[in-house]
Structure formats: C-alpha cells, structure tokens
Length: 249
Image 1 (cartoon, rainbow, N blue to C red):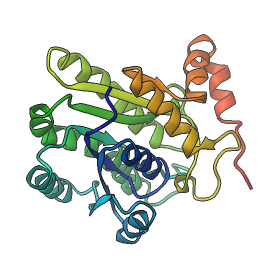
Image 2 (image 1 turned 30 degrees about the vertical axis):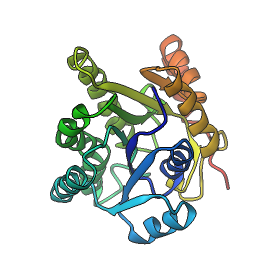
Image 3 (image 1 turned 180 degrees about the vertical axis):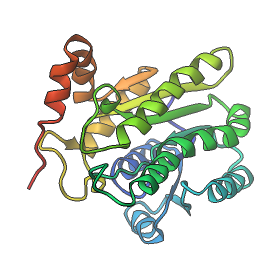
C-alpha cells in the first residue's frame, strides 16, 4: 500500500492508537481526518497535531453516523482510505451488572455496526478514488477471548469474520481490504491499567505501517502473532495464558 498523498479517515482518532497513527500518516504527507465522541479530546488532538481535520460524532448512534458520512462525502470527496479504529470495552461481570444488556448493545453498535455502516455509506466515494483501502482494526483476542470482557472479544471476532467475507466478495473490485490485529497496547483505552505485557502505541503503529507497506492483508502485531499460533496448537493453554495476565498497578 502506498502511504503518501492519501486522504485518510480514522475513527476514534483523538487518542491512543488512532492519534499515533494520525501523526505518522500526516508526517508521510497524507491528509488525515479523525472523528471522536468528545470535542474536548478532539481539541487536544488538534493541539498535538494542528494539521488534523476533526469531526465530533458518536458512531454508536446510527443517525449521527449517517450524517457524518454525508459530511465526509460532501467535503472530502477525494477520500480513499477508511480506517475503522474506534472501539469501546466494558470490563465487568455479566451476571452482576444490572445494565449489562445496554452495555452489550453499545459495544456492538460501536465496535461492529459502526464499521459496517461506514463501509456501506462510504464505499461509493472510496471506489471512485485512487487505490481505495478499508482497514479494520481488531485484536489478538479474536483468537482467544479475555474473560474480563464479556462482549469486546465477540464484537471484534464478528468484525474479523465480516472482514474476511467482505474481502472475498470484493476480490474482483478495486478496493483493498486489510485487517490489523493488535495486542494489548498502552493507551487510555485501558483506563490506566493496561496488562503488563502491553506495548507502546508507537511500537504498535510502527509494525502496522510496516505491514501495510508490504501489502499484507492481515497484519498481526507483536503478541497477536504468537496468540494466533498458540490458539491453534493449544487452545486451552492459550485461554489460560490470556486470562492469567496481570494489569499494571
């Protein structure tokens, strides 16, 4: 994949992996658009990287997602790269949480339905432009789930399955479909308690960029590579290992 002179939309780009990826792509000469739920975080992101183009949008709400896509289509018709990065997680016990169903719906809307909706809405303009690419961000936990997360693993596994099917269905088109599986990464997503094995956002993005430059369709970053292998050779061991990881104090 050519990583210069693109117009790139990154969801969830105001912090963590999304923001780090935005900075790297801008340095490579790309026009980068990000969206996020928090205007405060978007403002801080622009302070860090003034070249960012930002939009406030809660992607879990279908109407906001539709209106956002219309704005992108009207104002940035040259868009040729969509990176579905936004995701949320609820770390809780299923039976002991009164609002668990509402949490599940919110995670599914944000982590799975929003990417599908954006792909459907933006594919027409993506395909009109040079070398259109859709990148879906998932996780090594699609192979072995972490029990702390009752829904996150499932939403990302669903996105992984969809990505494989969508790639097959579009194999004769001009659109490039890529999936990036990240390990645990030290970002605000972990709310100050990432697993001790978590890598930096800089390292994670650097490996992702290398994979894109090599035109890989599936990019397993750092520990996600090992989890992929171990989960197939010894699935019970992989499950125990993933669920024995300690968080930082």
